[in-house]
Image 1 (tube, rainbow, N blue to C red):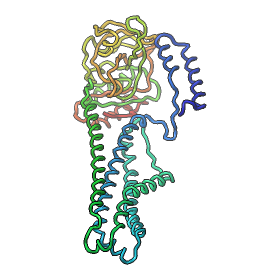
Image 2 (cartoon, rainbow, N blue to C red):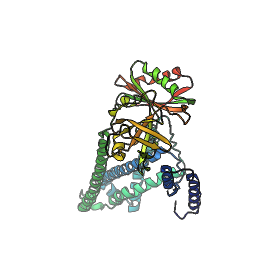
Image 3 (cartoon, rainbow, N blue to C red):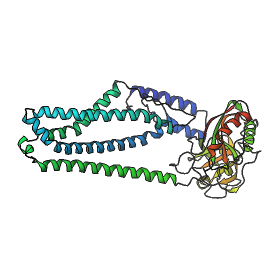
Image 4 (cartoon, rainbow, N blue to C red):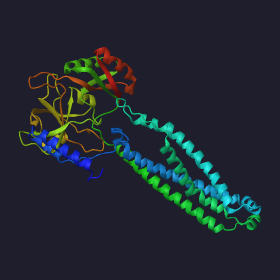
Length: 444
């Protein structure tokens, strides 16, 4: 929406005043954080298509794919136009005979356009049928099971109007020219078996072939970029082993202390085919994030954001992330208290020095580093490795009381090559281990 929009100006002023009032109760790193929120620009997006993270994640890729599909369709249309041009050469005697018995050129163009329109309508109908069946299938392939999405393809006047307009444009672009060319036949020359203008016909066909080749080159080039990007992301080091790893998002009807979640993990460990089990607030590369500014060694807050993730003992071993120094969490470790950091944290805040025993502060929470693990991508494969501090899954408040949780992710490493083979067994094991718990999502 335009920056001069009265609605945007009004909402921007309201949002800024609200954030300024909220920031009065914060100091240090939090104050820096809220100042960035206060200075942020308010954007207003059209809500006609709804709000969905799926749109943000796939809109750009689908737009590019849409351009590629449009080019492929143009190539197909140009090919059909060339075939119609070749057909018009074969029908030259027919057209000459029609002219000889009194048919005007306009009548011939009308007849040929009707033939081309029938072909275009048939193709559009098949395309609409394919879209109606395939588009919802594509959505089901990219959606997550804990956030289902439906794609409703209503056929209203706008859809029909767009389809009719598209057919009309294609007919004008690739149907009129062959029709005009075929109707321009000279009866005497055609009936004698000659071609009235072979050079003009060849130039036209060669021009359309050249356009096809140009479009094909562009489609192949862009497809090559897609493949290259896919290969780069597929071969990018993860820092952990995703093979034989199953992720289960488990929710409880009401908040439960960490000891209850530990009991469920213990029950999962005795399931046949399960090697290791660990708990985390959310999986790596899932899009979940918790970040803030930290103060290292009692210094001032760093302007660089640190990402945090709550994990249970044995998490790095389950993920097969190497423990480079120090120790893993113990059952008695709580947060705030101990922390394990990654290599990027050490390079960013400690100049690459040994982090064991060093301290840092996140808001009012104080942590001491007890371990160092290798780097692993946190939220997205395309993002650079960020500083990460892993804190104990067992979190207590200022009075030392364990904080309840309503949702956690269980990471299950299986002994079989297909971890999904245990999906049904693990789904049943969760409510059997503790009533009131259920699996909301299960995936590799």
